Length: 253
Image 1: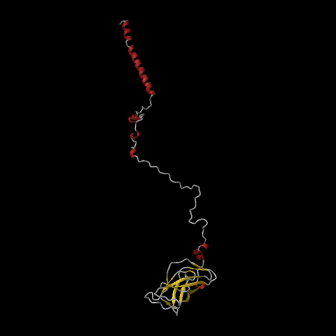
Image 2: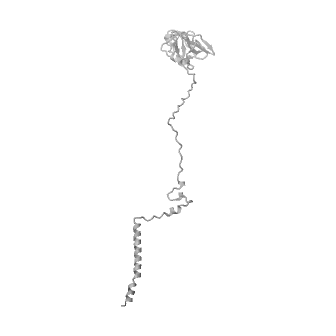
Image 3: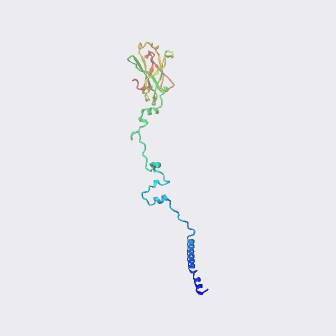
C-alpha cells in the first residue's frame, strides 16, 4: 500500500472524533447542570380559578368557591351596651317624703296618739249618771254620762255594754245594740265628762209593746270588766228598740 493511501485512511476518522468530543462535552455539561439543581422541587402551577381572578378588579369574591352567599348569611344584630350597675361614687338622693319639711308631727300634737298613750279609764275611777232625755220625730235619746273621778287623765274609746234592770236587779229585755260608727278616743282629765247616747222610740210608734219600766241601768265602760249602775226610772224602752252609740266627749250631744 502506498503512503498516500495510509494518510488518506488515517485522516478519515478525525471528523468523527471531533463530533464525539463535542457530544461528550454536551453530555458532561448536562450532567453538571443536573447536579446543581438536585433537591429542588418543581414549581407548582397556580390554580386555574386563582389565575383567572388574580389582578382582575371586576372579579366578585362572593362567587368564589367556599365563600357563603351573603343572602344566606343572617345579618349581625348589634347588642346595645348594658347599663353599668357599678356605683358611680355620686351620692344618691334620699326618697322623697310625703311629709313636708318642718311639719313633723309629734305624739303630743295628735289626739289619737296622745289618747293611746293615756291609760284606759276603769270603773274604779268613773262615775255614771243619766242625763236629760231628748225626743224628736218619735225617737227618744238619753245620754249616759261618764265622769273621771280620779286624779290623773284617762281615756275612753268604743261602745259601753248596757242593760236595763228591774227593782230586783234582773235584766229586762236584751242588751243595747251598737249603733253608729266608732269615734276617736276621748281623753278625760280629772273631773271631765264623756257620754254615750241611749236610743229607743216613743210609746205607740210601733205595734210592739214597751218593756216594763226599769229601775236601774247596768253599764260596763268600754274595755272594762267591772260595771257601773245608775237610776234609770226616766228611761222607758218601747218598740223593742234599744241601742247605744260610741263614747263622745262632753255630757250630751
